[in-house]
Image (cartoon, rainbow, N blue to C red; front, side, top):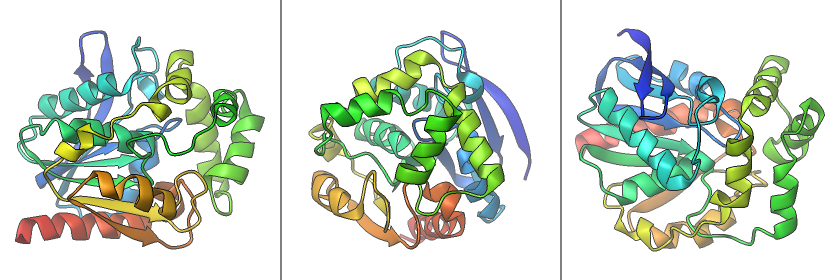
Length: 266
């Protein structure tokens, strides 16, 4: 097993990615709005070392924050496919969190070659689920400065806050996003309706919902996501809010590992 950083050329710049070699199917991790590849490190570090894994900074975030738009769902799905192709992944599983979960749904609906399955961690539903204009306006200012990010961590994103080092990471990642990337999700991505498209997903899909998630709670996902994707099943993570990859990485990695193991035996 080796790990290496690489720049994935997507035509208007490069996405910063890290590839861990290993066995198929490779796990391709897509982070949330405000995150970076670092969001997934606690999960990847807890996976058995034989799993190949790819983490990357989506367009406008992390070390990819200088990339120009557009930052729409289709573009982000195109970027994810470029990552898959650049890493020469013959078989892969998409693992998407929140916004990254909606991007994973868009890409999976295209039925790309080699896609073996999808894990959606606290995903945004494929169609708008009661998001109000006031909530979207509030999101536009959630990452204005360290204070507003801290308020989001404490009152929306987590169950009981985060350890100091992870709190610093989330603040840094949130503030590092480009203005275009920060605006695109609350203005358009969160309310874009891809509900009809996701019915095309034809691989196993595991949905992981946090029991205390105030952003995308289990009831919302059961009502607005599961009926849209015929192959989807849902499990509930215990003791976590919306940032489950950081709050309960042991649980997330365990579910991901069992899901991939099940694919191999099916």
